[in-house]
Image (cartoon, rainbow, N blue to C red; front, side):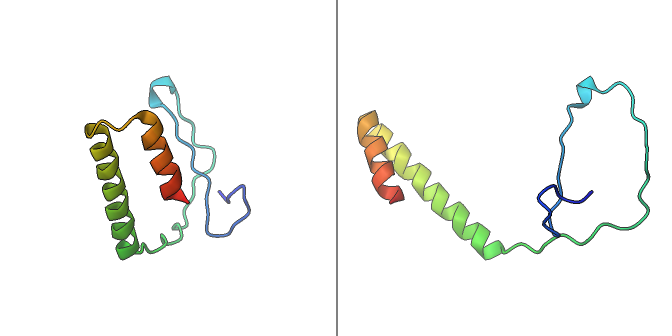
Length: 81
């Protein structure tokens, strides 16, 4: 189904907990193939993962070094700016 945002390359996704489903009824069966998925920029994803890992390691180091919670929050705020 088309996206509620109206963007052509987006779609709404609904997750349903199947433990609460007791019956399924197909109202409209689609026969056409879905559009191809957008390509992923693997190098950008790898860079983002590396950066996030380094940030988490620095946070873990601050905790193990005995830095107060206020000090950690101050560092994170300054780091974000």
